[in-house]
Image (cartoon, rainbow, N blue to C red; front, side, top):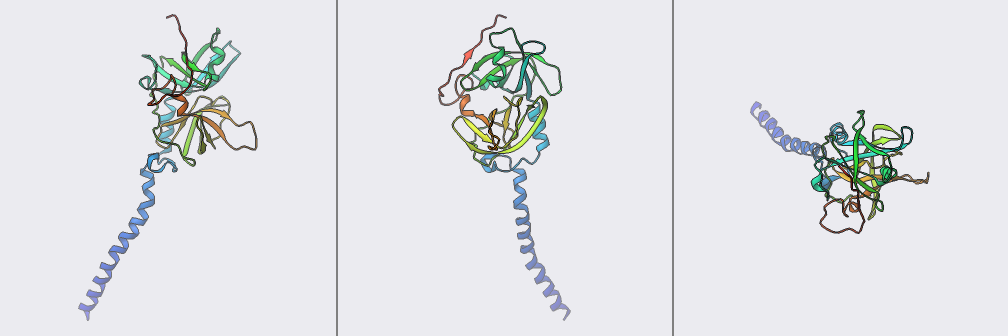
Length: 254
């Protein structure tokens, strides 16, 4: 009797093993998303380590100032990009921003400066700009790690993050999703304000998918906009195809 009982217990144990393994596999499958950061596989999920993503992105993001006088000027955001990616020659740190952030300093006595998070302003100069597509490239002696550009198409629903000086508040961060994409613009749900202009739109890999540019004036429209990477493909970023756009170089006497 005892032998039969032992066989029965062994049979139950053998039967339970595959059931337990199956349950473990089902429980483990959803957790895989926490180890998968690539939009190629799942750009809809938020990154596993958001705090690190913010920290890394903030290290490359600056506040941009166009100072006309001590009491008059404008403010926006910029982000470092490797000069090797750009169609510019510079031995310094190159920074992308919006043209409308620095346009009042073009051809005037005003000065352009940049500042890391809660740090003092440092001199910068305008290398080139594209008024039509609202883009500009600056250079500065400030040492900043460059952000990478994404090579993936941004599908509606993808998770994205914005960083910048929203309404003058440095280090502002907003999470949201892509609503839709156009040839030149990416529509996003992220909250942005004046001062966010020129900031990076970051995917769940920590790569740039656009540059925050405009907010909707219509209170009933719950979205804002970023310029897509397609608009970079003029005389600013090296691309595999040509994009119709005009960029203007600024010549300075050293």
